[in-house]
View 1: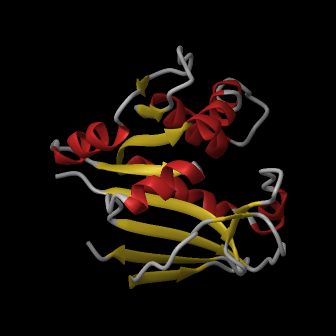
View 2 (view 1 turned 135 degrees about the vertical axis):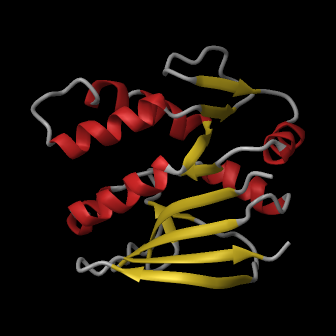
View 3 (view 1 turned 120 degrees about the horizontal axis):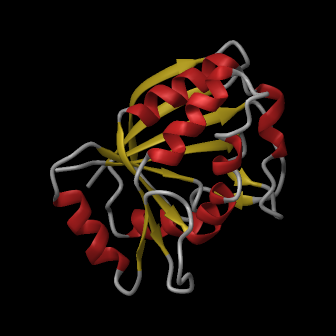
Length: 188
């Protein structure tokens, strides 16, 4: 059985993005050791599960980065992993997916994701995708929350959690930039 892991950058005050969806609060604390850890995480994943908005943003970014030879070798390698990793997109409004290795889930996402979890294979990672994460949480389909907590408060934004949720701390890692990765197991 596959596990679903939400890997999310969040502020100290619990927001995954600004009100406008902005992520500029992440840049000052992002470091190469964090990029290496993120690459290790992605290399162990069997697929990415994404909502429409996150998919569109990533599909507009990663294919171009993968061919940009002026970037550091590590960035190009991560882009190659993002581009080759299977992507499963939940949307009732998208009709075509142009990013390599992408497939669409329409209609009943709960049933389709449950079937994905029941298949053998590597873990499924979820990046961004606030509405999808809220649904997965409500359906009790998330096995682990990997929260990258940044030493930043933005006051208002898109919250990660909208309801009470009991979690169990499994592990943590602190980076020199002040970012702490907290891995929580979800109680099912």
